Length: 219
Image 1 (tube, rainbow, N blue to C red):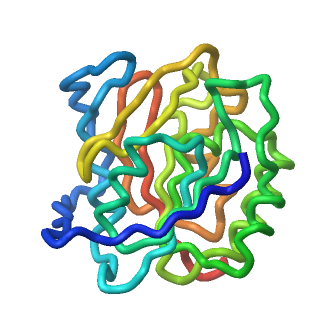
Image 2 (cartoon, rainbow, N blue to C red):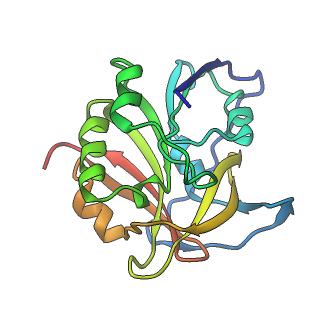
């Protein structure tokens, strides 16, 4: 699937971002409701990801994919351009995916305000991940935020899942077959992603750690 680009308008009521100020990882309270194979779980990190964004401007949002209807419906609330890349698809591992260089070439000089990487960082090998970070660096600015999911312990299995935004403070998760090939821990991310700093972390179930990262000056 090539990149999916859509322009959404924020609704009249807008969205208020409820924030928290804790700096240590928070324990996941667990799922609340389940519909078919999706579970809908509270998240403390998503509200922080949106906190302070200038909703009076048109935001550029990157979704690493695959495209999920819940997320697309959620972004209808905002004035934004949503770019969905099929960088990986755990539901169809045998299918070809869009290489990161091809996707970023297709978006030109766009710089993203928010990047939802989901657990993509646990899929590429070290060389491919370094290439991805190098390219991504050219598409962020000094206030870009990244939302991602890594492994709490890199040596423990991390189950493959699909992710979506159900609501501002609710994450949709759907497990699929298999485990991710390259689980990366918080320390791994902090070491490799030098253009970004971890600002918030929350421990979830099943060896998952939610992260909010912000761009920093070159070290």
